[in-house]
Image (cartoon, rainbow, N blue to C red):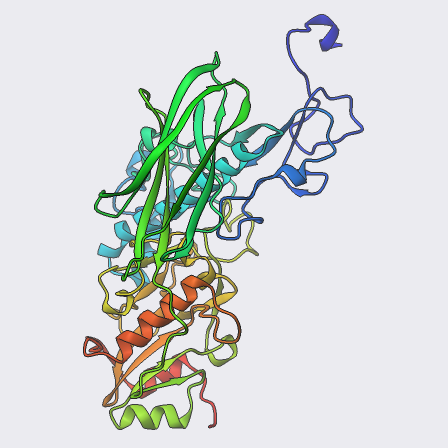
Length: 475
């Protein structure tokens, strides 16, 4: 009836699911005919993928429903406080969650964890929104909004808090790089490379402005972490139509023969405009396979021989499996969807936190939070539960736990044990099969550290404390 009364609009009967038996003029759904039309299920450490295959078969426009919904740890010492709630309802849950956090963590870690978790939340939003824009047949997407939602189990899914104030995760300018009228896009075949690899990256732009972009000029460059340009060039001049995904050519170069592992950034922009976007990637020197130092014992189990080695002053790199841990916690890359109050069966991690200056990470460039180079290391693996260790003990790499639990978790720890020195890693290092570039590089970093003079853990743990973390095994 509405179509006949007012034909200016397109009409649909519902926002979800997309039902081809209805007489809708466009479809809105979280899933297409061939799988989910949102989420990061198809992400394999690249930006080549999109959702085109999931929405094949629809003969009308398709809009993806309520994408994103990634959470981050709140900052209990800044924007996440009860004083903001001045109405008739008191947000008592904030104080309860803060108490739980402080049970296992020093207060000074609160803001650092929140920043690291927020960075991964932003990374996930960027990755999913760009995949939407790379999908030629995708007509649009819905976000729940940019604010947190304090209901339905507490959903801290926003760039802004529940009052609309910034959480310090991203500036409007940063968010508009990947969510705006005109967005440059790239199809990176990987986000980790070997030095000297051919670097061939198709570049596109999604434009939905009021008019076409006539004679637009596009450029690119690659910079290091200090902002120094490594390489750059022009993508020529294009007429970019509105309402479409347009190819702009490709970035083509050979990556430099770097001797040290490095984080680089690819930037693409439209000349004489504010339109720009950027993507980090990591370049590692080619290595055959990390060598085990002669004075380092590598073991997958907490055996009497390992304990003997430590008691006698030896060095051990321990890579236990899940069955060898007292209280393992399954993890993944990324953060919780919506909230575990409403969806309690999902995994708990909210990102990682580490000090990039730790000598154990010297050969694995990272920020304080997890970028995509951590994907393989944090997939199909588990964390150590460190609650019973001394309150002041800190792992090398934290797993930030869901705020409903706030346990002290880690995937990389070190300590002096007995007269010896011990590293324990529960990261997925690919010890049982073929390793990815990032897994190889992390293993090399740990091996070099364990075999070098810098391996001097500042913290000490007793054999009894380690027995509380690790199940003993026979030789």
